[in-house]
Amino acid sequence: MIDYRLVFYGVRGSYPVAGKKYLKYGGNTSSLLLESEKDIIIFDAGTGFINIGKYLVNKRKDIKTLSVFLTHLHSDHIVGLPFFYPVFKKDYNIRIYCYKYEFVNIKETVLNFFNPPLSPISKKGIKANIEFHELESISGEIKINNNLVINYLKVPYHPVEGVLLYKMNFGKDYNILYATDVEIPDGFCDNGVEFSKNSNIMIIDSQYFDKDYYGKESSKIGFGHNTVTMAVNAAVKANVDKMCLFHYEPEYSDKMIDKMFEFAKKRFKNTIPSKEGGKILIRR
Image: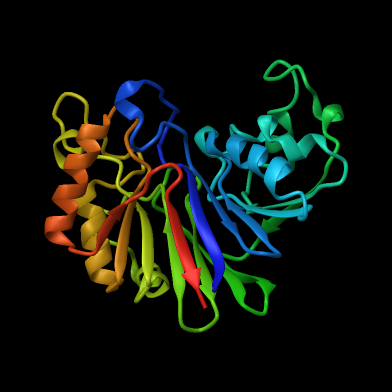
C-alpha cells in the first residue's frame, strides 16, 4: 500500500527555462507535491506550483485544504502563487507557512505579487481563504496527522535572511529531508547536521559544478547555493541513505546534469537526480 507520494513539479533554481535541452529534467523552479488519500502538502511555490494547481483542481477535487511550506521568499520560490488555480476558487483553504522575518511582512510580500504593477489581478481577485502562519522559533514541528509530522529548522546558509530546512517524518521510522538553497562549503553547522542526520532521503541543493562556483571571472561564491561536491559531502557527513540532487543551475542542459549525476554517483553511490514528474513513493 502507498500511503504518500512525493512528486517533483519544479527542480530548477533561480529562474525557469524552456527548450529542447531542458526536456529531460524540466525547466520549472522549485515546487514539490506530497499527497495522500487525505492530505495535500506542497513545498515551495516556484513555477512548478502552477502545474500542481492545475492537477489539484482537475484530479484531486476531493481535497480543499492545502498546506504550503515555503523555504524562503526569493522570487523563484513564490512566483507561481498568482497563477495557482485554487487561489481563485472560494471553496479552498490554503495555509502558507514560512519563517517570521524581522523586517518583512510575509502576508504583504505574498499578496503584493497579485497587486499592480506586478499583476493586474489585485488581491481582491483572490477567492480562496488564505491563512498565513509565521514560524517564530528557529525550529519546531507541524503535525499534519498521526502519521505525518513536518519538522523545520532555520539555517543561515542563504542570503540575506536564511532559509528553512524541512523534514517530512512518516511515523518514527522513515523521513525525507528537503534542504534547498543552502551554501555549505564547510558542511552543515552542528544543528544542521543533527537535523539531517540519518535521513532516509536527502533532497539537497546541488546547483553548480565546482569550476563554475569557484570561477575566477564569474564566481558564484556567496550566491547561496551548493556545488555538487558540497552536496555529496553533506550527504556523507549526515550519513543519509539516499541523496537526491535538486535546484539545478538554469543554464545547465540535460547533458550537463547527466554529468553532474554521474559525478555524484561515483562519490555517493545511492544518488538519484530529481526531474519534473519524478516520484518518490512512501510505503507503510
